[in-house]
Amino acid sequence: MTVLDEKSLVAGVDSSTQSVKIVIRNAHTGELVRSGRANHPSGTEVDPEHWWTALQEAIDIAGGLDDVAGISIGGQQHGMVALDESGEVIRPALLWNDTRSAEAAGELNDEYEKLHGGEPISNAVGSRLVAAFTASKVRWLADHEPDNASRLAAVALPHDWLSWKLSGSTNISDIFTDRSDASGTGYFDSVTSQYRRDILALALRDERQIVLPKVLGPFDIASRTLGGVAIGVGCGDNAGAALGVDTQAGDVIVSLGTSGTAFSVSKTPTHDNRGFVAGFADATGHYLPLVCTLNAARILDAGSNILGLSHNEFGERALLAAPGADGLTLLPYFEGERTPDRPFATGTLTGLTLRNSTPENIARAMIEGMLCGLVDAVSQLESQGVAVSRILIIGGAAKNPAIAPIASSLFGKPVYLPQDGEYVADGAAYQIAWTLIGARPQWQNSKMEMVELPADPSIMARYLTLVDRTSSW
Image 1 (cartoon, rainbow, N blue to C red):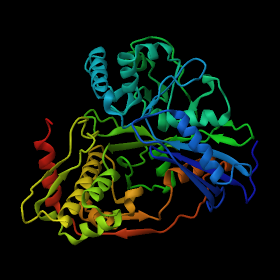
Image 2 (image 1 turned 90 degrees about the horizontal axis):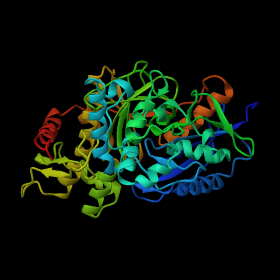
Image 3 (image 1 turned 180 degrees about the horizontal axis):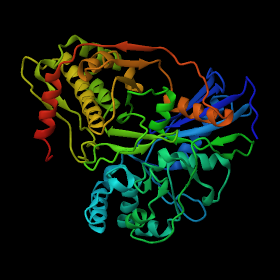
Image 4 (image 1 turned 135 degrees about the vertical axis):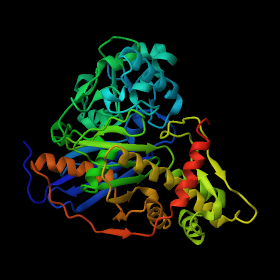
């Protein structure tokens, strides 16, 4: 049993698409003691060993775990880590943003409906499948790499696999997960907290009993490191972020990372048959209705590269333009899109004239286009009964000086910027502190900056017209 005193430390990890971050905090107060970070390789498929190497590097940079009572890992959702019976990785992990499984997702949605008299798959697992879901990637593996599919003995998610590696186990039966991450597989029912093995078998085209991670409670001690450090169950990245910013009723978090997400904690599940809102679980035993777009911070990367500016300079130029960018509208589908489900779409900039073709207007249009996709995402949450009183914007792109004021004018609601932090890693640390203390920790919440500007509905109207016009692309 782990006994905590007032100086006990806990560690939280965010293993994201681009990097791994670790924070080590006081379990009782949340005070940050030290931290570490290491990069991941780019791409939409990655050998998981890179994640393990990066995690060890980040832990070393953070001063190690010798004085830490517990650790919990939050990680990017959906990715497929395919393992053989000895626990060896069969092929590089397909990440959430790998769209090669888009056709497989559509097939699975249709096949499930035919087998169940027209009942949509979202009734079973909370979400209509898209390319990101693990089930879609399992089907892709079965159809395109049958030899690898025949070796498949277990399927893990990124945070599951890292937690298992941290435990030192090599037995695939020891892999564990939580409801939040399991709810992104496409073969887990978060209402009953049971896997839908019939959907997994449909995806694999095989009735074999593939090993799936044990789904533990949100505050279980799942395992221990070889050094005796307690390992928490962990969570998906968005569920971790919801813990990290201490989400309250009426809050919608808009996260601007590699992808863009809008989500809220709910006591009731959602089942959006249209496929816009994913019915995920959260990290506390509730639910996490979520809308995800593929294009967020990288739109700022692209815009900065086009104009030859730094991110801050890009934002400053955008603020010099009038709202609406003098008629320019961007559809930011630079890498296809997940919501709406257009995996093979491309970006579109319309309304160009000789008069409005300025760096300032282009910068403004690119930021407005990225944010309009997330304004639309929040409206989809509202259509599923999610109450929205304020918007909390987090993620790397939230630091750009143009984001908060432009977002406020588009959302038409108060926009809050939590103090800069590693929200997913903070949430994972909060989770393991809660686990070890046995009650919700009373961490001191940082103050939030609030921005509230009048809404300009004409910008969103132009954007939605462009979305409709390109619906067949």
